[in-house]
Length: 255
Length: 287
Image (cartoon, one colour):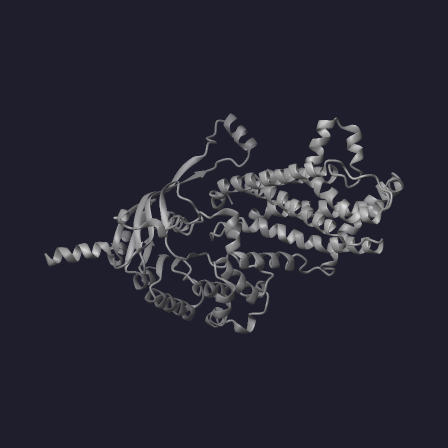
């Protein structure tokens, strides 16, 4: 009796609300074999296969990620995990099914995409934070933290085109990690910088997870994934083959 | 299990409210405009002077050919002012429209990696074009004041209305061709054709009486309803006419043509936004 009461109570007020809902999502890409009308006609006359070929990048994937969860999406190259992440961020739209999200969300998908080489480091911090959806006063409040974390204070007023690639990535990552967000999508960016900087990033992500941020991580660095995530979703050739505890997910991936 | 969750708090990522979203991204819009104006003349010695040199050269060529060789300055009082008032409007349109069309492809790196309302890029492009229009308009104003121009409410109203019309039609067409340009780069070439037409099909190098004399009445009505023609005539009324004493009369039915032009602007904006939103879903794949 008491047990039943407890369970109904729990279903009425779930401890953690979902942040991301993915329902029966499919994504198909058309692989074009010809890039102009002329090429298509000539190819057709010569008897080549000129019609576009369909490629099922994601096939019927469903999962729910609760607020505060850290989830890894695992899979080998070309399995469709980055496509999945892009659909959560809104860059791509699913062909079928739906993706729903709650709260402020930004993808750290290839950080530095919005960097302009002719602007100074300072201007780029503001520009990129604004691209991630931050307001001016929020950026002002965090500016010093961002620069300090990146460790490139002496160069902040130089144009970004004079930066080394390491400095560039450190600043870009620092902006992204300080953005005011509820959901963080991380795509293979922890491979930036040297070992001390990576350790610093990992620590920062840990503290974000403790603050209750929802995190979805795509990475081939399995040790890092094991360290940061409690749950793993394995995707193989666009199909979801496993969803559960991270250790089992890593075993499933290797099998 | 998802059905038990209240879905009203959720949104579908990547689905914005179109142009309305731009208001909540004002800060980014301001930075994009600043970036567009600041980086334009990087590594150039003359810098912003180019914004004056180019229209001045264009003006000189047209003035010598049309004013001196073809003797237009005899028929039109203050022909130089008449010509320049038209040129600045057409230049504003051509630059705004061209920039807006290329804006999505130019910002491709961003469009395919991070979601943000993509309408920001064409709008920023048009604001940048507007900022480059200001120095030209300032030169026009100085010349007009030297020739005895005095400000009037009607004149200022006509100027602002003309600017609004040009910005609206450039944005509407820019959204439409900017979206098409992602999948079919032919759009860019098509836009260059439209820019060529827009330079010659408006009464900049000639007066509105010339097409009236040659065209059948219905076609002249169509001609006069072109939003760009209305904008150029508004500029002529605001800037050039007050500096003249015995000029030819303004075109008849300006109110009617103006009304039709505004309706065309609204239609272009609606069509542009609709097509843009339809194509937007595939931007990241096509780029």
